[in-house]
Structure formats: structure tokens, C-alpha cells
View 1 (tube, one colour):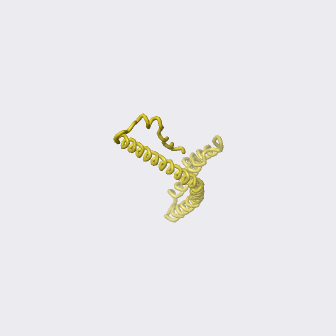
View 2 (spheres, one colour; view 1 turned 90 degrees about the horizontal axis):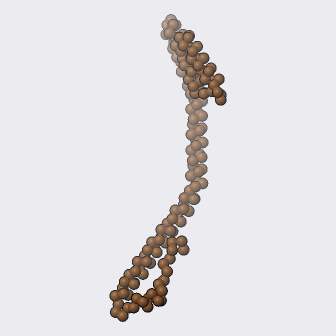
View 3 (cartoon, one colour; view 1 turned 45 degrees about the vertical axis):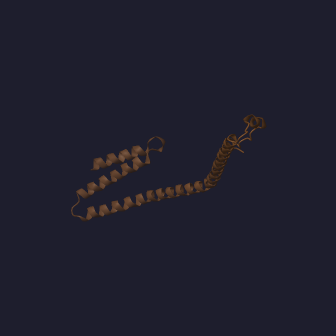
Length: 151
């Protein structure tokens, strides 16, 4: 157990001293493994049950103490992300509403243009059925222009 604990501690030291400051997660895992192996070695060769239980309680308390720090950091990061997302949504909500109004207006204009074109076609068809209709006179007079969607 001493050899394994020393090997894990050495791996943690190498992970800490790596390029660019090392890998913190790998170093923490290596040091935690080293400590766990050292405690397992002591607990394995101890007489009675009190020392192993004491070491287990101590290791559990230390583990929760270290994990609580990371849990707090994760919770802060999550809350900060939620705040940023909420602010971003509020900032862009008015743009979304304006674009929705503009698109609805364009759709209404297009519908009105189609209705106008249908009415004009129906009027021309009805006029063509009247007796004495001269299509050349209508062409000379000119047809009204259809509105474009951009007007």
C-alpha cells in the first residue's frame, strides 16, 4: 500500500507540474487516490475496528469538505449562466417582438395584394362576359397597377 500510495502521489506531483500549470482534475484525483491508499493501508493492518472507522469518518469528512468547494463553484457558475441567459433573453425580446410585428404586416400586405388581384381578375372576367365589351379599349385605357408588398 505504501508503494501504491507513493506512486499515486508522484503521479499527482507530475500532473501538477505539467505544462501550462498542469491538469488540476488529474492531480486532485491522483492525490485523492494516494490518500485513500494510505488510509486503506493503515486501516487494513490496524487491530480492532475503531481506527478503521475513525479513518473512514475522517476521509469522508475531508472528501465532503473538498467536494463542497467544487459544488459551490459549480452552483455559482450555473447561477451566473442563468442570469446571463435571462438578461440576453430580455435584451433580445423587444427585437423579436418588432420582427414579429413586421413579418405579420408583410403577410397582411401580401394577403391584401392577393385579394386585390383576385377581385381585379373577377371584375375583368365579369366585364368580358358583358355584351359589347371591347378588350382593346381597356388595354388603351390601361389597368391599375397592383400594389407591391414593399409599399
